[in-house]
Image (tube, helix red, strand yellow):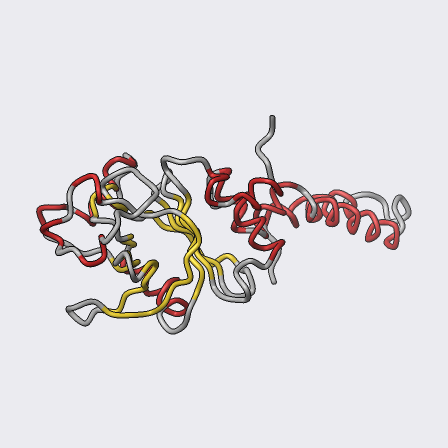
Length: 241
């Protein structure tokens, strides 16, 4: 493990300055002890701690952060890899079975706001799904690996509602790849309810864990209160009053 430059540079400067002094001015043992104090203080600085914890630098929303804290503290994921899909931020965060942060990426979501799937939506042909029914449901889901009618591997979030997580694809006219790169969140609402992620991110962070065995997918609501779907997390880590 290497130390970031901002941790060791104060020590280098201290040693360089002290070596220029008379040998009797500062005993070497005291010099090294002082350098150790500087190094320890720098290692516990906010910048150093953030560098050691990529999740703290992910830019995740407050609700995503408190949900992840609750999942880690309660082991709600039951030793499985888990993902948090933050609908208000149109972002996915992925964690390994031991809770280690794997990465985040923008996602495309259902074009309609709403946190419930329409009754019987999983049995409807795509051509019969109405615009207000194109929601991505919120809640806790045990995912399972699968494949679509074209044989592409996907991750089922809710099999009965036909909601899956898969690599971005679609008609060129829909500009889905461009939409993923857009900072305008409304641009990322385009699907019938499925969650689309960048192909590179899917291959690197999703497929290795969720593509071979069950995982847990937490989907944050965009219309109903956080506490409606995650009451235990809300109670354990309430928002500041």
